[in-house]
Image (spheres, helix red, strand yellow):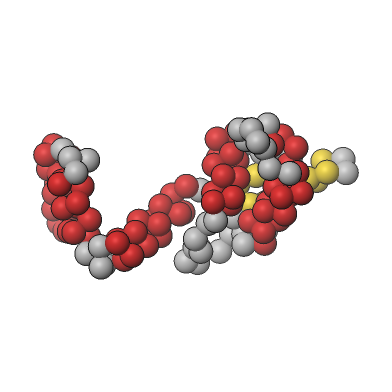
Length: 128
């Protein structure tokens, strides 16, 4: 199933867990996915249902192996990063990227060197 480059929906917490497991460990059967969960592990049916939902959204694909399916991620972390960041800026910073950066500066989550690198990237992009 080919993934469409449409705007991505938000992932639920369960969906995010499965995507992270697939991104980190490659193609897996549902029972193999369970081994990557901490205790208490979710029920196999819960994981199976969530994987099928992700597949219906086009984020996960499968291959048939004997009488079972091995699932793999189609969507990449980068596919979600831009949308997720946009949602955070929209939801918590009234759509202002500068307010988001200001919050990072205020909380000392970004250094002066990192800010200079960002300025350099913006200037380079502007000149392209």
